[in-house]
Image (cartoon, rainbow, N blue to C red; front, side):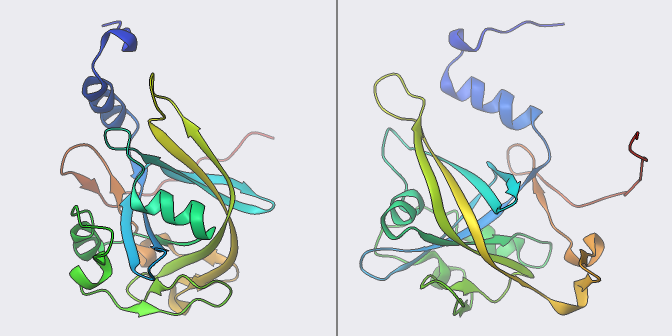
Length: 202
């Protein structure tokens, strides 16, 4: 077995190792509002659950050459954002939003996604997602980097859930109906695939 010291790797080598190893990763499509009122949208696969009491999620938003991304800047500024689950039906459109645009350009318009008003916050979501979560900023941390932070870690508290009725029954979500996709490495994604059950020990 190979044994690798990450401190002797380049950032890119560590990145490739991590994204190839920690799979599959759920994908959050995040909408935010800029100071100028532009709706920004971007996908992130450094995303997961933090807590269910209260419901909280995490986003790790990598910086590019030390520069904070629009999504992180908008969340920290307005303290509101919407997280959408990326699924088989919307992944092609969501992928378009990964393009590098200027802060005054909207990825929502580029991908022809449909804005929809939120209930409790000012940031809109998009209609094309089967699940979306209105979030407020719980905490943000600047992490990593030798000379300047390399990532903004965002903890968001979910204050409103939205879900398509036909995939929600008796408080449970139908995973096949949702059809969530996950991120692998490179240009590769994964579907849910075979589902199996194992009883947890008592």
